[in-house]
Image 1 (cartoon, rainbow, N blue to C red):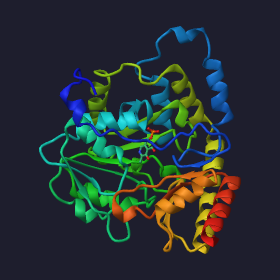
Image 2: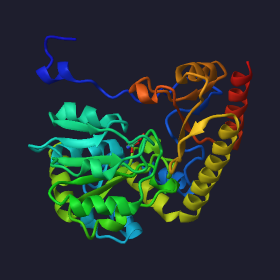
Image 3: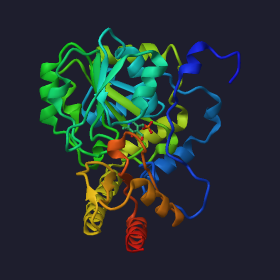
Length: 354
Ligand SMILES: Cc1ncc(COP(=O)(O)O)c(C=O)c1O
């Protein structure tokens, strides 16, 4: 603390990201990173970028990257906004589009960065409880609001919402922006990108951190109506002209060019998830249905905190949320490679038999 702080800093409750331990030989299943490395074509593109041109600023419009993303989704470049990770894209969305007289709505159990942005930008919000099955119930959002945001699949539950339900929400909610945070969509959830050309109030965010295995490069983007994108560009150009550096742009373009690698690795993660779900159910775990690269599971006889601590003793790290109480017995477990998943199952079996 210091007497020089601006008043708002005292009131902030910053987001706490999952731990990035500096210990060797850990089985790290706590931050939903991809167990496979990035495409070899991305590595080659990054190496080629390490050149004299680094003394020059990057393209402030990230035109090559936007063109590649637009082509990938069959959209126009003025429907694409790019940023330094989808967290930065989300931050700009909160500031540019979600601060209105009515409160912003999001689920009570969801990505814990949302309330943090509200605190930073002074946005009032209301949380909407997930139903008894931990699902988002669209009918509960059909009331006056200053915007709606949720991940699909939701995090940390992993449960996907069918596209038809999102469309039903958009048909009923025409006066505010609906943001669908698709950080994990490539692992088996239907994308709402198909709706952006028909609904001027839907924005869909994607990240390269999960299915493209580039969490370390920090790349995210939003797609939506050109009018919404223009608002984001205005905020970005009032904040940082160059959020995408030369490496990030080269890596982003190369990643989209290697579709074979993308399809292969995401299918491997999906197959490993199904295997892990059945192994954990065989051990007596309740596992929520997942359309993501993680699962959310609890055991009827063990507290979540106790299981997370026991795994940690065996050098396996998973994510445990103490709050809200309704999810305190769940573990959020990232899908690893086959060896990592086997070590996890063996460690859990050991804990349950002890
Ligand atoms: C639901 C959700 N949205 C957005 C993000 C941010 O991803 P990034 O900033 O790495 O693109 C995450 C990261 O874990 C997430 O879980």
